Structures are given as structure tokens and as C-alpha cells.
Length: 106
Picture 1 (cartoon, rainbow, N blue to C red):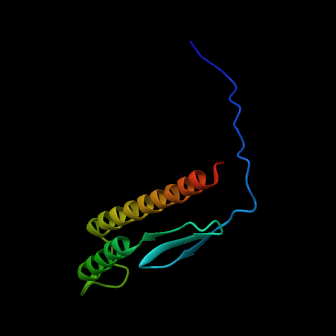
Picture 2 (tube, rainbow, N blue to C red):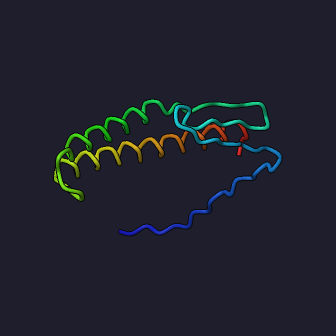
């Protein structure tokens, strides 16, 4: 059995008088301020720490190796770091969107 149905998406009514400014930094990864008086900061120290750990591991593995050296271990820690960064970006985007949806009642 196959069910086919049409889903009508509700387009949000945007209030163009309300804006959110986002400043991207390092320790304070995202500093967000709106013209409605609401503001919040997403801390970036944890991500900075993970990236520093990654760079240290890469430097230790590549020590005394020829330029362009690559190994399965490097591939593994690179993939892990990339997944962690992608996860942080997705979670931060969700926080910003949920803040806007809650504050501005789309």
C-alpha cells in the first residue's frame, strides 16, 4: 500500500522590524544581540580546546615525517574532529533558530 498526500507548508510571517546580529568569535563563538533587547552568547572554548588537541596530535604524528605524510591514524582523528565540529555547528544553528522562533513568535 502506498499513501500519497499533499502537505501544505506554513510560511512564517516575518516581522522585519526585529533583527538579530551575530558576531562570530573564538572564545565567545557566537555573540547574538537583537534589537528587542534579548542577547545570548554561545561559548566556543570547548571547541577551541578540541581543535587545539587535534592540532597537537597531528603535529606529534607528523614529527620527523616527510611533507605530505598521511596515515590511517591521521585520517581517524581528522574524521573525529570534523564530526565534532559539524555537530557543534548544527547544535548552535538550532539554538539560534529556536531563540528566534521563541522570541519572535513566527
